Length: 240
Image (cartoon, rainbow, N blue to C red):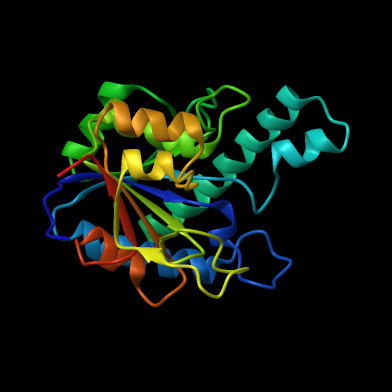
C-alpha cells in the first residue's frame, strides 16, 4: 500500500496496553514501545490521532450482563479510556512527541474537551491528538468513536490495531483453513458478514469513504510499518 495519506486515526484497544498474561492494567513498557513506533511515523510528517479503548480496565457490556444498568456501565468504561489516553500521552511526551488528550466528557483538570477545530489545529501543528471517553454517549463502541472522529477531522484512513493479522473469511483461531484477505471492498465485507468493525462504525466509514486497515499490532513494529504505508494486514475500501 503506497502511502497516499497524511492524516490518520490509529485505533488501539485497551488490552493492547496490558502485557499479555499480566494482572497489571497498563504496562509502561508496552506503552513506551507503542509510543516509540508512533514517534517514528510522526517524524515522517504524518498527522496522527489516536482513539484508545478501555477494555483492560472495564467492559460496559460485560458489566451490564452482570446486573449493572447499561448506561452507567458504559460511562464507567468511558472513564477507563481516559486513563489509557493519559498513559499514552505521558509516554509520547517522554519520547519527545508533543500530544494532547481530548475527551468527549468534560474533565478540564486533566484534558481538553473535544473541539473539532482545535483537534485539527493540533494536528496541523504537529501534535498527536488522543481521543478519550468514546463518543460521550452510552451504547457506542470505541470503533464507532474512531469512525466518527475520522469523519470529523477529515482523516484519510483508519488503522485498527488488533490481535489478528487481518480479516479472515472465518475465525482463524477455530478454523485451520481460514483464509486471510489482503484487500476487501465495503460491499464484500457486508455480503460475507465479516466483522471488520461494529455496524455503526463500518457504515460511517463506508458513507464517508474512509479506508480501514486491520493489522496485528503484536508483531514487531507493525504499528510503525502500518502508519508508514507498508503492506500489512487487510485493507477495506471502496471499489477501485
